[in-house]
Image (tube, rainbow, N blue to C red; front, top):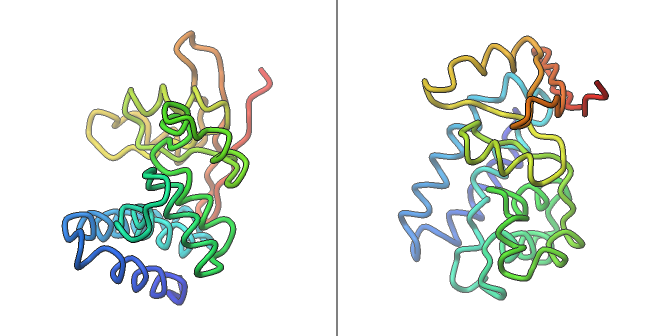
Length: 186
């Protein structure tokens, strides 16, 4: 991590959130700290994840609210005002299963057209695992609690993730410096 993009992202998020939404700013800093823990897995993409982590809730800033849907508002702001990297704005736009909430708000087609979802990274709890399967795109589970202690070994060594009917959904292979996600054909 060289930190240039991360420093910029932190500055933008702080300017938009710290004064008006201090608890949201504290949350965003916490998420960014967790992203740093994943740097060893992501290699060259570590800065991208850390930047998306600190910016993921920037759309909550009242002055940025256009649709009232913070993932979309934040991503549009980063794209239109800052000319941010396409991958960064897609991560912000699609965090926390935004596509599913967008569907409930009648914004799914807009979100999908502007910021296509290509994969899901989630924390491996039952609800988020089920939601990941509903998106129809590859998913990477990153367990964060003791109840998911069986999953970190699968992520580190490569393992099969299955849907509720035990059908293989995808295979993960995570070498030390990169991550590859592919759908299983079995």
